[in-house]
Length: 449
Image 1 (cartoon, helix red, strand yellow):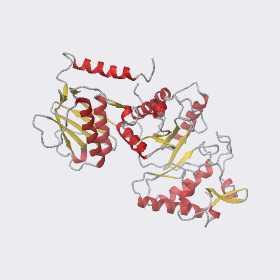
Image 2 (cartoon, helix red, strand yellow):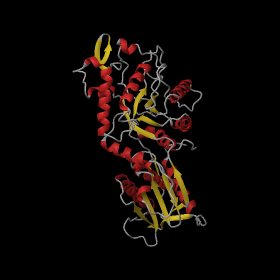
Image 3 (cartoon, helix red, strand yellow):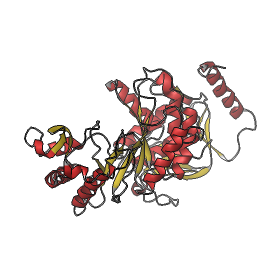
Image 4 (cartoon, one colour):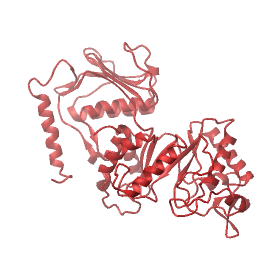
């Protein structure tokens, strides 16, 4: 049977709807949102709805109308209708229920015979509550745009009485396009991410080392602060052992954090090359260890640099992380001789490992080596994220079936203490939507089947 046989999908929706509408299918434990195409609820937003809450409310109303034909109102027409409360706990202070403490992405969903509560610890948590309700109604968005919208059709809509308190298993859950993305595609992607309860917190990563130094010391003015290669200063990396370079990097980050105070982690990932400084002071800090990537490791010298930067930031910004990539041919492994500052964040990339399997695949020696490497990093810092390639770069949009591997590996990542995932993807959903959709669901709940 073809995976892309869409008529079977429609048949399943109709079958499920028919079973739900069969005599005796309803019980007192069900609450109706629509009957015979007429809305049975009134939507109440919190006293100060955010832009995200407004977007979510409009999507909730619009989706229920698509399913049932019911016109939902937020006007004062409450009489005889279920009250649906949508918003943050802090904004609803007089609700007749007890709501647990909620973190940013936590939500509380409670369905009673007279009211439904979609309450979040933040607008993000509120959004997750709303889309959890829509998932329970059978709504799925398997890819961006109308083509990926899978909605049931029924003039009668009901949901069971329940109480649900939930948070995602990973705090960082993002799939982004490495290249070839239009403005319209970016908007469709944003809608898809929201509907699938994805989230990218203000934790930066990206090749940003020379950009940071250049804020106060561009290469053209201070070549002495940049990497020495074959006796010549180049702007490919910086001289991380130079105290003045360290001080200027600290200054640049401090200025950035004043401008963007919500930043949780600043990126000092090295530039995308292996051309690190060859001066005596830099090379003296190297461990002599051969990196998994095949070249002498520079991880110790780079960690010394990061430790100095974090120490310089600690007085004014004690909670901010500084991230870098465990990546490429000479800085994939952790440092051997240098302690890792607790505010170090690592984006561990799969660049030198097998791209056809996951760490749940014990038969793959390369991925088992990656799993061992991950264990080495999580023993040194609790701020470890995975930078994954899905598919392998420059694959031409050809199919790269990884959805089964994602299903197997997320539980392993959770057990190892990984904080989240940044998937470098492509805007080629016809080939990759099974990978991305299943990956998104498993990043929310790694324990599910």
